[in-house]
Image 1 (cartoon, rainbow, N blue to C red):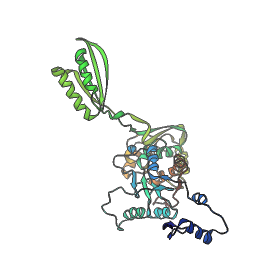
Image 2: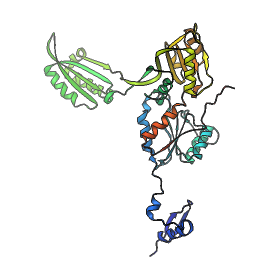
Image 3: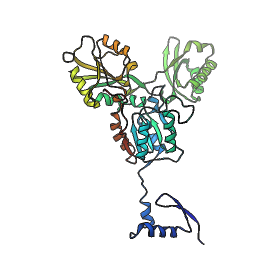
Image 4: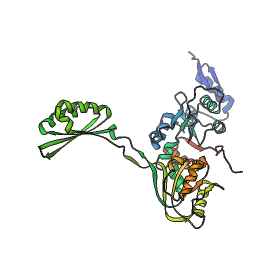
Length: 401
C-alpha cells in the first residue's frame, strides 16, 4: 500500500509524493544525474556546525556572569526566538544598529552578540515607529537571537578594560572598583552566641536543624567558667529563626550573649570596574599617546593636559582607565593620566586642576577592539561549532572631519 508523504525538495519547497522511493527517484533523474546518491550521502549534506541556543547562552554567562554587570544595566539574552533554536553563525558588534542588523541578515547570522544592549529603556510596543523597535521586530522575523554583555564584559578579568590596559605597556593592573563574589552558600549573617555547656548542647541541636545555616562550635573559658561559643552562618530568613531559638533556650541571658554581624561579600580577584595601570617603565605623555593610538587604530584622540604637565618633559607612571564613559569611575582617582572614551566638561576640568592629563578617544573606540579578541575566545569556548564573525559595518558614530 502506497503511503502519502510530505518532503522538502532541494529548492526548499514542500512536495507530496506517494512514497519516499518515488520522490527519491524523481529527484535523482532531475537534478543528480549522472551521480549516484544514497540516503547516507544525503545525510552528510546537513551541517553539524551549530550549537543549541541554551548551550551558547550558558557558555556566555560562564565567561562573564551577568552578576558582574552594574545594577542599572540590561545584560544577558534580550531577544529569544521560539525554541528550538540552533546557532550556526554569530555576529559580534559593539552597537546593534539597523545597518549591522542588515549585515547579520545578509551573512545569515542567527545570533548577535551586541556589547551595548539594544534594548535598554523598556519598550511599551513593537511597531515601526523607532529604530530600536524595528530592530527587535526584524530580529524576531528573521529568528535572530540577541545577547548583550556590556558592563559584565567591562568587569570580568580578561575583558574589555584589561584589553584596553594591554596596549599601554608592561605593568601592574588592578581594578579601580572591585567586583564582589556572592555570599558563600547564601550566608549573609554571622550569629555568635556564648552559653554554658549544658544550654549550648541543647541550642546547638536546635540550630543545626535549621535550613540555610551552618553551625560551628568552640569551647572557651571565661570569668564565669567553661562555656561554648556557637557560630551560625545563615541567610536572612534563617537568622530570624536562629534568634528565636536562642531566646527560647537562653531566656533572659540571650540579650547579653548574642551578637549578629552582617557579612561583607568577598572581592572577586582581578574583576571590577576600571583599571589602574602602574607601568614598569615610566614613559613620556607623548609616547603614551602613540601607544594608545596604535592600540586603538586611531589617527587622532582628544587630550587635556594636566596642570604643570608637558608632552615630553613629564613622565607617566600611572594610568587610570575605563572603557566607554569613565567619568564616574575615574573621579578622584590619583593617577598621572585618565584614559577613557568620553567625560563631561566639568570632570575634565577637575582632573586637569589636580595635575592629571585626560585622553579621550570617543566612547565605542575604547571598546570595539576587544571584539577581535572575543572572536577567538568564543570560537574555542563553543568548540568550533559556531562560526563567529565581527561586524564590518559597526563603527563609532563620531569622527574627526
